[in-house]
Length: 561
Image (cartoon, rainbow, N blue to C red; front, side, top):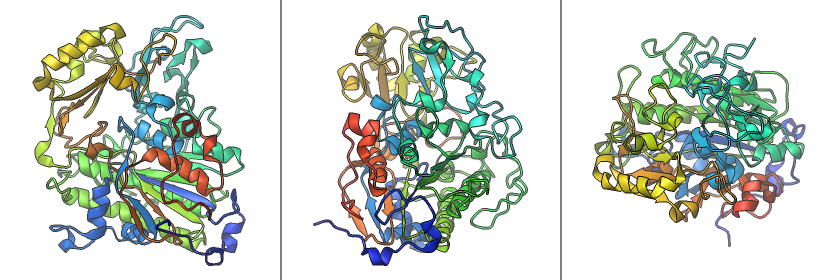
């Protein structure tokens, strides 16, 4: 017998305020709200919901999340994508697919079948030639702030856009990589992903869809064709910090003036300023709950919607903003002062969201999913080692394509954080490259190398020939715990790797009709996507990733609602 059940239909009667919204299913769940908190580990939730010695007098410090747990399923062994970067991390949540199928390895990756952009990107990916229907040269792929018209502006530089809002229009097509097989057409982020998404499936079924995230490139969640989103909000997180008139955080701090004027290079360079950035997304969700678009125009309450928080990630990883020090105090993941403030801020924001769901009469008909695209490592501050000078990419040097090589002083750089994802000029040279790395194992803090069969098993065989994948890396290097291929004192953790701290993320499904339950078996964040479709009364098999990879619905989800 299942360890949970839903209340009877009578106890979940939909209020009049919710009856005018799209109802895809005949069941009780009419809306799914997906909240992603970058960096939020399963242990962060355990500590904040139960209390931990040395913080807040040992009392819980996330009362709103703890309240959701009382009517929720807590998957304590949930694992994010590998690599654990935001791009594949979100792809897993919305498509049910791993990089093998989605083609999404990192926001900065490589594709042997594409050509460079017509104009050098803001991130430094150099422009290059493209011959229509000719032989591709291969190119680094940039799906960061590099493709904005103007990455220094919060609206991404979209022509005529309001202060905070450019969305799809913020993407400069001249800065997109190009596909020679399609006549050198620019490859938009939503066409870069190879599989469809929950937003596309719900939209095709007549449901209203919405998403907000940290930059314009996250329009990729719409899926192939870019038609899966009715409402997208993607202000640029790497932009220069500016005052936000009328914006107040959930804890009452005004953003009408810049809260931390000494750190304005980007919104993630300050513990205070990032909260104002996240407040924009909270306001978007509150508008959508009220039956409006993210910027306040009349609309429907979405069937599927959600957003992402950056604040916890900044509290974990960034040593900046008011001269603070982020991260944890010890290996038990006890948060330091700055991280504690960011967790409390996000919890207060979730409290406002839950209050709005209740106020508008749709709390009972909404499944709330709280999770993370990725974790952050190391939680043990004594184990952090930064070493960009001795990374696998630095050691291999000329063996890498020039846009990927550290020898390129103005390029976008290699795909390295606390992982090293490597594409070689010549895949035939992989064995010799592996030999070089293994000879220098101590120098680079080598943990494990995936290549050949150990890589092809979970990804695809790299190359451009029959049965090969032009996006597959030739090797993935995971370093020893704590080793991070970054440089400088501004970072104390990172993500991208395969380890426990990088991948063991919070995953909580909550609804008033659920009984509190904890699931300890291993699950994957790829299982969130088919679960969302199931609870909305749609067939999970409509997702490409589900069909191709056999992704299952999360355990303990009721068969009927």
